[in-house]
Length: 624
Ligand code: ADP
Image 1: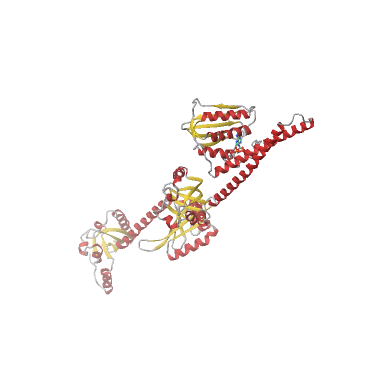
Image 2 (image 1 turned 90 degrees about the vertical axis):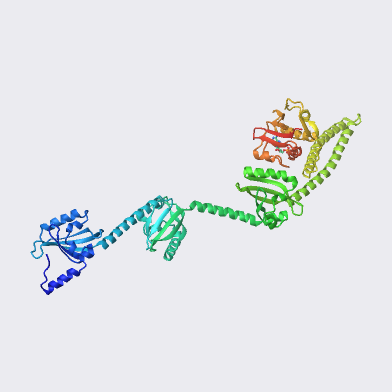
């Protein structure tokens, strides 16, 4: 069929059809194309004539065919009905094009007798739509992936939009604050920020946001249990791949513990700095191999080197140790490494000019791995000097006291002798008087004896301190020494029970000053007899160990606390507790002297005791 051109308006109509962007085709009820406008070629690639040789349904995508067929059937049933459907049609080049077909049933119209089909190419629109849909799907998917990731992350995460309002908080955030997402969204989260931090927090956020700059800020955030915790919040601006700014994403972690540790560290660092810089004490940081890493002025000054000299890599701490202390130093290093600390000890360091400086030092291990230690040193020259002067004074005083004491004793002896040699013919009153004088003199003699012993002790201890203490060493049998002393003491205290336990060997050989060793045992034994109840046995035991002999004196006296046990070895120390006051008013020097004697023999002293359970004082001597 062809359209007749008759009138002017017909021509205009035809021109419209032939030059329009949409194509028009007339379809017979069986799909035969009875007319196709030229635009069909632009849409489907077929020249109109060629298109008219194919069936209209033949170019429809099989997937769209059933619904189109259905529409067509429905359309044919109702004259004048208009239906619109989007279908895919095959282009002549084999590709599929989306067309929107508007079908009008004009089969009954004698002038047309066909279904007028208006074809509008919507491929571009469809493609754009599909792209958009795919993009939306992608976005949704990546959003879902982001949330999954964020919820599983061990940090708190939030996001905000370009209006600065928060759009998302991950599960860890919500678990931390104990609030719902709805409560936190927008500016809701600021309700949990500590009031003292809110303004600062908002200022940082707003200014960084406006500048599109990353930020990091610390603030306190209320936890679900009401406790404010310090968190660090790192925010970064976020944009799409094409550079469009979309907001911020931030992550936070609870740094309360870290802050506390940091503060503690800063505090102890400050304390240490103050100590180092105050220069009251010498402070040194060095490794146990002798490399010095830090030293303060005070320490440098003590040893007479400049700090630079001491810190030089070529300098070694060992240079400050006098050769006679090498062994002590090695022992100290061992103690430091095994226990982590070096208790205060007195020693000497060599100054640059060769002189020696007496010090009190202590150390602690800073870093086990790097074997780094901190040492604190106190110059005790002045104390030592004062001590020396005191000793000198004591020594002088003792000497001065001893001389008149000796004369007093001599004079008392003389007086007693004179009484003894009195004429036999004295009147009874004179005899009575002399008898009384004799008693008084004997009492005086007893007192002078005590006094003399005290002065002797004083002299002895001063000699000890001033290292004027000479031993006369000989090979001796310790069994003999012990037996002798026990016998002497038993003689002096006949009413007391002293038990002696000896080893099977009859000879326990030692290199010793017999008199001095005897003095030690006498002191232990005298103390035991002095402090223990008179009806209790005191036992003396001599035992042989691997490379030494051990002598111990065990009593059932008042016993000593651990502190007293360590202090009884000090000069002039006497336990103040009841049961410890001897009848002779001792000076508290006996054990100090005993220790000095034993140590000079390369032996050791010690005590085992507990309050109320008696004491065992012991000493050892190396076997020869
Ligand atoms: P002192 O001349 O005072 O006995 P020591 O140096 O011998 O001096 O003893 C010091 C102190 O130790 C004594 O004063 C006493 O308090 C205490 N002590 C010594 N031996 C004993 C002991 N066997 N039992 C209880 N306390 C003791």
